[in-house]
Length: 149
Picture: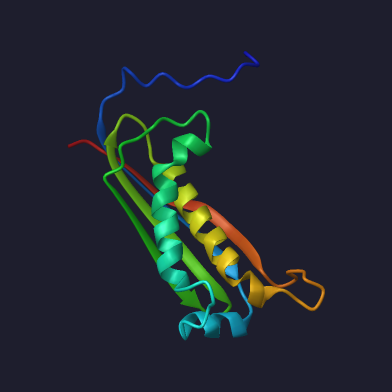
């Protein structure tokens, strides 16, 4: 096995519909969740900004992960749900291409979650400036589809 990195050659693969869905969760303080619901976060609307960041990130996946192919995405949908102990982000990505879009879905989910953390960090810190409660967890691919037209 070579110790060099190389992109996988997909030139002989057929172009088909590819879909992938990923999700993750960020645990937040109850007070922070209340502030998000009441749109009282100083940096703005957390849900809107996190969705926008996730969409932008999906389109930049090949720039962030060096061996990923540049895929012409046809749709990125970010669903964000506030739950009792935090926020769940689910990203669904679609493209007609020669390789899957699961990395794009994972990147969209991850960046959406990081954006939420960035926007609420002021409210999540304890008296020592630490984050003992805040945690991003359970990022995973929950569905992957490869269909012929």
